[in-house]
Image (cartoon, rainbow, N blue to C red; front, side, top):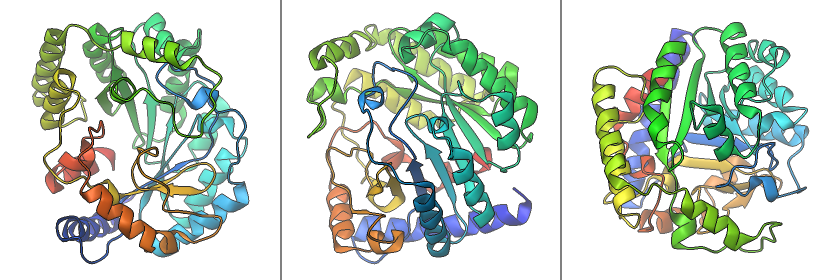
Amino acid sequence: MNKIDKIKLASSYLFVHLSQQWVLMSGLGSCKPSLVCALVNWQCNFKCYFCFHPYYGKREILSLEDWQRILSQLRSWLGTFRMNFLGGEPFLRNDFIDILAHARKLGIMSGITTNASLITEEIAKELSKLDLFSVGISIDGIKAETHEYARGCPGMFDKAMAGIANLKKYCKPDMKIVIRTIIMEKNIDEIIPIVNWIKDWGLTGVIIQPLDYAPILNPVPPPGETLPVDFEKWIKTYSENQVKDLNKIDILCDELIAMKKEGAPILNEPGALEIIKEYFHNPTIRIAQKCQAGVQNFMIVPNGDVHTCVNTVAFEPIGNLKTASPKEIWTSEKAKKTREDIRKCERTCLFFSHAKRSLIDKAKMFIRYI
């Protein structure tokens, strides 16, 4: 991204942030979303023990033509903006590169989230032509057995590492490669080594988050789902992977904060790391600030439904892109009601960034990512 594009994006985001804060605090007026993401498919080639995606099976998804139309509508409505594509595992779609290419053609600044196992040299060469602003990659252990335990697929650690190496080899140096790591019982002693590995490999940084307690606190499958798994067994496995020694969490978070202050490639702000510590001690912790998800998020799921909260069980979709444009959905009465409901929400929530990230924090993230 050149300097002019960066200035345009920064100016746009500053205005959007101010309008979002007004709507958030007053409940009046209008704003546009700043976090746009698209789940392009349900399927995944991993079987992570904490995720339902491997069990979804065949479901309706938007076609390439649908995505081309939707991306054009988003560009017309939002102007200069950035967008993240994920799944499932997005590279299971044969036309995923075509979706990204259309986004680039429209001037949309695109990022992707992937497990990297399918990023061959050929795929990396194709991605190098698309001017992606970032690639987020899930890595949960510095040891193969740890990562593969969490992700449920033997042999995938080496494939993920090969995928990262291919990105470094073929993509432009200014493309951000961000590792995403979940803290759990199995890998708590590998978090610091992961940070050091990221530094040694010259990657952008790591985003760390705790394993969500929500399925344990409210152990029911999503409504309407018939999953080909033993749900009680799934919950048992999930529970067993919560960190048992909370003193380890305190020591880890304090060390991460100290490392960040020394310049380590940790993208969480110190305040967010403090909240992770609090969360492990008290999973029912309430966030003091109003949640910003309702004014920030425009999340498209594979069938075209649009959500503002990532908790798709708690809040219904605000519309579907097969029957309405992004702007029509965002400005609908249903969307306004959902925003007000989210503004008042007091649920226990893993996604602290929606409540805690200030303008200064966002500016720091912007500089690191862009």
